[in-house]
Image 1: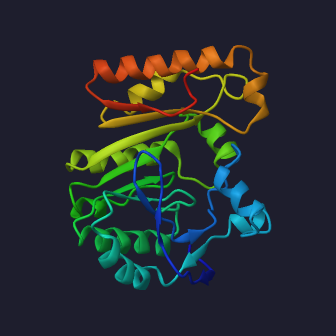
Image 2 (image 1 turned 180 degrees about the horizontal axis):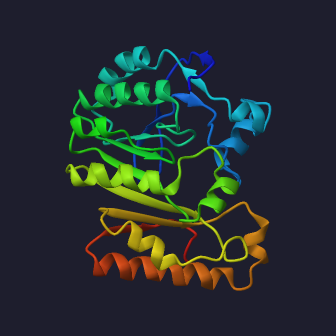
Length: 255
């Protein structure tokens, strides 16, 4: 597939306070994955009038002048930047959108040419071409389940879970830094699943990030949801320590 819509922006490198990536690039408006957690990025885009609604959100618009902007901004900002993250309000490897994936690779190559490492997170499939880029980069997937029926309901346009894991493992085996974001993880009244089985499926990675589900009333409807997330966070910590994996528990997950 290919994006039908394009747009231009006046700037592209944005400062962020998030733990992975002190700067970010969001070179697409919208996301075809159409996640229904609900998606915070969609809620903000709708609130500020950047998209009219869900149907326009899932039809991505590509920023066509992103490389031109980077050529202007990177020389000025390079000494301030530690890492650049792709992406916080969209997906750099949107499933089956070859033009978005190609542009993301161009962006990574451009950022790396200034000696700046990139982190990338996707619900799509990570392209094998990433093995040719800086070994200081790190590549991740979002994984909150192994149940494809659940994925089709909650992340309808995203890549199947097995495909995500397979693409990540190939990069890991080729010597790339890999990680998984288990966020936003649902409570059992949304889906009851074997958490350890999910952890075992990604045992090969270098880092695991774990976070709870927000903005969903069903979470607070679940009795003892705070204790539930505390227990899962402890399982992540124990699993990672036993398997020599780095970890990070997101803010407000443990209470």
